[in-house]
Length: 175
Image (cartoon, rainbow, N blue to C red; front, side):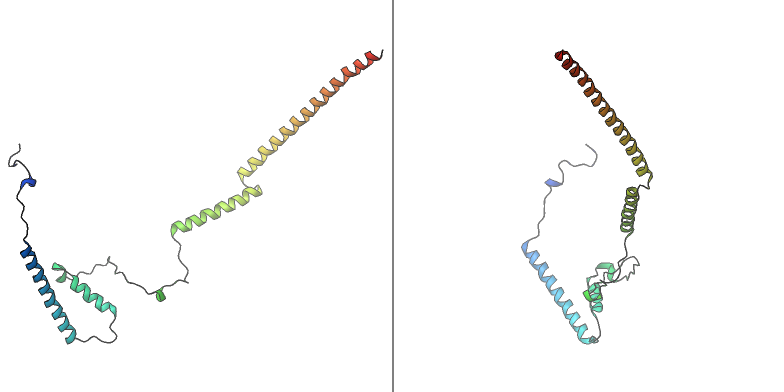
């Protein structure tokens, strides 16, 4: 067993629980503290009436100031990388304006156009692959024509050979 290690572990230790009276006291203290803060805010609002042209930006800033906790309230940090989310109204959105395509979308469109151009040239017989296919096709057609011609000649030869013995048989019967 290593030095300083105790037998058992954290599970066997005695646990302490807060009593219900302590919890009630904490809740009451928090409520009183929030009431005091609300009263201070109301006094500030009465002392400084808002101008009629004040927008929602000021109230957002005030809410943000109230939500700051700890040292954040003391130090004012301006982060240039932090972009505040500005909500736009539907009337402010530019729906009709031309939308810029992303690089991937542009590349995809260019790829489709190049494929269509290639297919048109291929069908017209102007590409290397189309020329090779047409040459192969011409060779195959020639071979098939020769094979058909040979078959026809063989069939005629067989008919002629079959006609000769029949003619001989008919001659011999007539005698």
